[in-house]
Length: 179
Image (cartoon, rainbow, N blue to C red):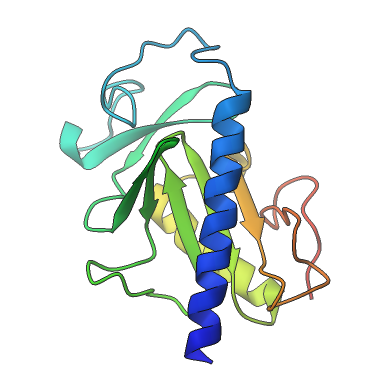
């Protein structure tokens, strides 16, 4: 079972990285005209912070419309991998590269993409659990999350029926209804 979970995780991560490469290659270098920086998350000061959050505790993410949102830095203390297409953070893994949740995984790309891999039945309950964690990490409402570049995928060994397609977040338009 553990070996299957590890293999499934690797397959999903490879698929998500490939999807990230595709997204990066299909976008122009800076279509929104927003200033860029060497920080992979853009300028942390854009959009302003809330309360006593310092600049090092927030990051900026871009939604599909090119708007910038500042969110708590949910990438801290999580493993990352450098690819030619960018940096990917395994935000549901701890510093020892262990998954914190057995039913899903969330990967954040420096291109502002979020990929959720669902690894356990019932798929609907696993997706809801992932959505709850995502909301807590980002501190965004359902409508704000729907504007982000989020892909929800299931490996074929978990469900042949729902594999190889983006299921979406349950509360967003066009989401696939799951059992």
